[in-house]
Length: 142
Image 1 (tube, rainbow, N blue to C red):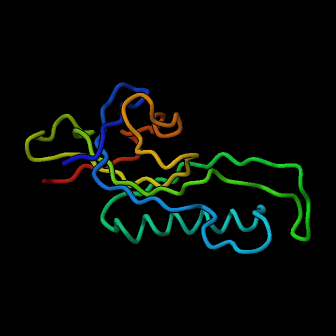
Image 2 (cartoon, rainbow, N blue to C red):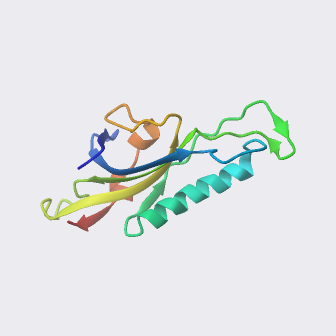
Image 3 (cartoon, one colour):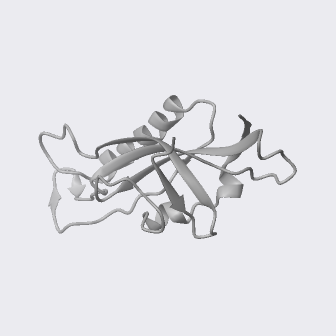
């Protein structure tokens, strides 16, 4: 059972079959977000996807970074979107020679988004909708 369907910019429909969401800055008790901290959070999210889906290719969508007008001990402030996400997506095969009854394509994706909503349809974040599926996904036998 899929949680939702996302329509890529290419027109391909992909199914979201697993989704984990967490607060980007959950546990940050003091200080403020800055570039080095965010780089560590982005790397950790990718590693989380790799651990959770070791048999699937993993793609990290580069996050949008904002720069509020604040400088402190760690340098200028930099923020990421509020919600860190890891999802598993599947679709039809990327190799038309494979039997579509026996095969499908999969891709684990790590991304950040501003709200805790399940991406769906053509309303999904443009960074998700622009995934170059044939280049990133891998065919698997069912």
